[in-house]
Length: 267
Image (tube, rainbow, N blue to C red):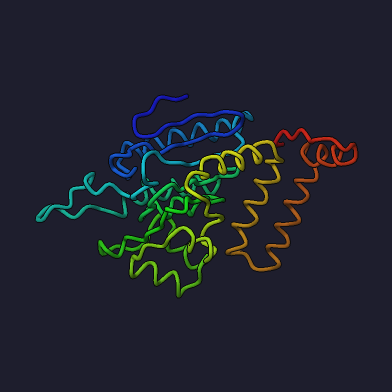
């Protein structure tokens, strides 16, 4: 286990768990947390390269997932020079979500309470989002005169359509986890006391699976949001060719023919 102050990071049985750990501030981001999350994600990438990390889970301590930016970490008092919020996006939030999107492994969010602002869109940038039944998602930017960041303005209309995306972004209403599942914003809403066990079970299953194929699938799904049909078919061809040459494909076929459990290596 690595030593951090604002997060926890541990790896067990191929599953890396990054836990946001500022529960007294609803796990809102300050500069230190951004630095530590970047360091942890670098360790995830190194673990993916050496085979020790095959799945990433992002969780949170306390009663909430993440309240977004810690406003007390910014000088926004009357008469003060206006903070450069664009610089914060470029330095912190943009690399955070692009790193998650580009990781060659499944990324799971376990949302245990309120996910607001950048915290909501951090969760939505993950590949699979599980939420406790008491959890909620809030696009709180409008309350501060801001626009959805951390990929929110891109993700929301693609998952929900423009009408619902604009409703959430302009009104800043709380979206309960059950409704988020019904709308297709997240993968699954589960009972509060089942969240941790559910995520652990799914993460363990994925960690033992053909993670090379998972990575190719992840790239294909995300690329489809901007590719035309012919370009997407070419991408599928190239990804299938790469998968067909992988150890995991050969092992999967052999295990099927021999009626045994496969031993995937992620390459």
